[in-house]
Length: 435
Image (cartoon, rainbow, N blue to C red; front, side):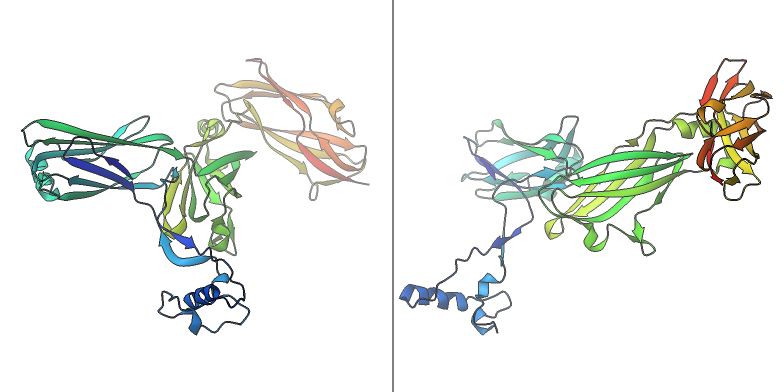
């Protein structure tokens, strides 16, 4: 609470409205002595009434249990003695009391309350205008004039959406008894901190994205998550993988409570809005180069039901990009579950697609030295000819496995003779060679 009282007839008191807390009992244990002071304290404690109207002396408790030692909190609610910490996503509520402390009437009072941040200044209350609407507002608010000793009470609210320093500014203008226009000003500064620290980790699975989100409770209070929703950005749709037993979120119930310093991890799968078979080259390119993934919307409750809400900015990723020559598919022809026999030839069918902006003349050079345990049969260089934009061509490659176990195959160099573009493919797939 702050008080302004200079030579003005008006005083302004500003107080933040905060939720109360349960006070500590802080009871000292009494020894089993029989001194008059000890007996008096024991009798006063046993006869202390509870909120339900009973007294502790009437409760059925074991002889060895002290009534107030069983619970560390009392039934008394206390208001915070300090301003406390303001967090992003909470609602700032303040009570303002303007009072005429003199024996004279103060007239033509104009009051303006603003919230100033690093980027903007928002008006929370303003009746200092001169139009008909403002005059009506003055009459409705009872602030046109104040009689001797008359107070005017006002509550203002502001949803905190920015970090950093916030200033609550109050300006009161009035006519003194001498007819002079005077101004009373008060500013109230406080800091806004970040309640949650959100970190991300991105994994790519072809056109899909696996997004891991880490949420850290950076406050000094326990919070209970009430909603955790990810809003995917275009061109993605999000699948929430944070459910158990059907559609029950993992953050609901007791698992939604986060103690100070707790860290939770959540997983989402982002899929393109269109299936791969229906996408054009331009749409596929837009997905590959899209950096924005979406926003995370979090709603929580603090002690005594206080609500906080935080929506992150766009969660970004480093674009994986795309090759101008894409290897869409590689399948072992005639093999069962990717298993081939030792020293028996098998055929791999490879589909190559042109995803550039112009036609290509593509050739493939097999690089057997990279995976010597499975060698290629036939010619080393394959000419696929001209491939138009978005067109796919298939080639068949015969291999011979020389060692059993899991082996890699398909190292090759793809090149375009028209543009000079080349792509080095380390391997196409892994196979199991059975002896």
